[in-house]
Every structure is written in C-alpha cells, then in structure tokens.
Amino acid sequence: MRCLGIDYGTRRIGLSYGDDLGVATPLPAIVDAAPEQRWAALLAVVKQRDATDLVLGYPLNMDDTAGPKAKEAEALAGRLRAELSLPVHLVDERLTSYEAEATIAKSKRREVRASGLIDSRAATLILQDFLDQKSPPPAVPDADSD
Image (cartoon, rainbow, N blue to C red; front, top):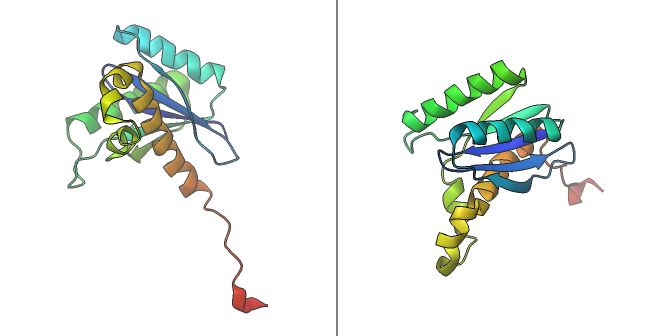
C-alpha cells in the first residue's frame, strides 16, 4: 500500500506519503495560484508516488455534521475516484491544522503558512491517523504471562 495524504485547501494542498511501514512523512505542499494548476500538480504527485490509496482530510464540524467544507471534500473525493480509479478514504481532520500550527513558533507562523508547511504537516497527521487505524501497533507482551 502506498498512500498519499491530502489536506485540501482553496489556496494550498498539503501532502504526505506513507506505505506499509506505517509511517507518514510530509511532502512539499502544492501552492500554485490557479486551481487547475493545483489539480494538475496533485495528479502528478499521485502518479509520481505510484499511490494505491488516497487519504483525504474530511473537515467535519465539531458537532459531527458535514458543513460546506466537508461537502467540498466529498466532491473532491468523487473527482479523484473518477479520474484516477483509486480508493479515496475520508478521514476526520478536525483540529489537525491547529495541531500542526502549534509546532511552529508564533513569530514564524505567518511566513510559514504561505509555504504550505503547516498544510503538509496537517496532511501527515491525517495520513498517520489512517495508517494507525489500518495497522495498529503490535501488542506489548504482558509481564504476567511469563
């Protein structure tokens, strides 16, 4: 399994990659200005990484409802499935951008945000959550079983 994690935004697309090792690593974000350029760049990364699965952040509201951003993610998932014939997994992404941003010093957040670093870190959190669900860590042997 070769998974591409996607934190989709209207300005930037954060990306991450993970495989059977179960570790998600960030990739450079797509920061092209025009939507069609971002789409073409996303398709190129999918092909370059030979992805078998796409893991897309699903921005549910805090009350578990699907708002306008979640509907956009659903539409993107449909477009990705249709164009690439790959499975697209929607993963709850609530608070991932906040968590990713918290790893950056406050004084640097504005300049870092434009680079897409925060978006790719969020994509890494989304993908890691998916990978952890697919293959939970091995059980620790019980000390009493000796």
